[in-house]
Amino acid sequence: MFSIVTGFQDYSQRAVQAAKYIGQGFVVTLDHLNRLPVTIQYPYEKLIPSERFRGRIHFEFDKCIACEVCVRVCPINLPVVDWKLIKNIRKKQLKSYSIDFGVCIFCGNCVEYCPTNCLSMTEEYELSTYDRHELNYDQVALGRLPLSVSQDSTIQTASALSYLSMGVTEGHFNNRTITHDID
View 1 (spheres, helix red, strand yellow):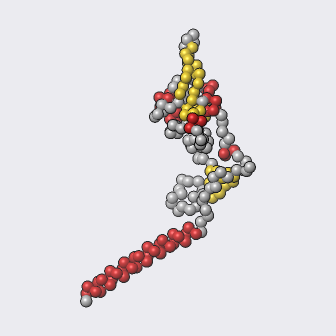
View 2 (cartoon, rainbow, N blue to C red; view 1 turned 60 degrees about the vertical axis):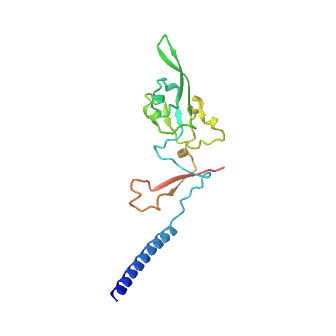
């Protein structure tokens, strides 16, 4: 008789625990019903990258001294620097500079270690093409400044990270900025 009572107590404890877990899951489901959708309709809406976002590299030809520090610090030796030595003044003159973004890992080492700050990261992240050879940018393409998403006149803010609990969002911004593309 004692084993039947213990078995019934064990069964009832497990049933109560299972009901508690089902109730917790149901509370989470009900919590998600009260939230706004967080989906961005990409071609028509765009998120503004964070301040230290590592996008396409911008290159200023006039500032470069052809020291090749960017090539030495690059983990894959990616930047191609072509220069000639001017013997009478014993200085290097830059002839061409190129980076293949199909291979680049966007680590930012070249930007960090450049002594003349001729390299910088931009907000541009839309680099997709149908031909991978179009991702090989020369100094003219690298010198082109992209249209900044943050300077677009159609910017609209929406609440972001509201779906996370307060402990998780510490250190994050409470707003996310999106842009609407107007054609």
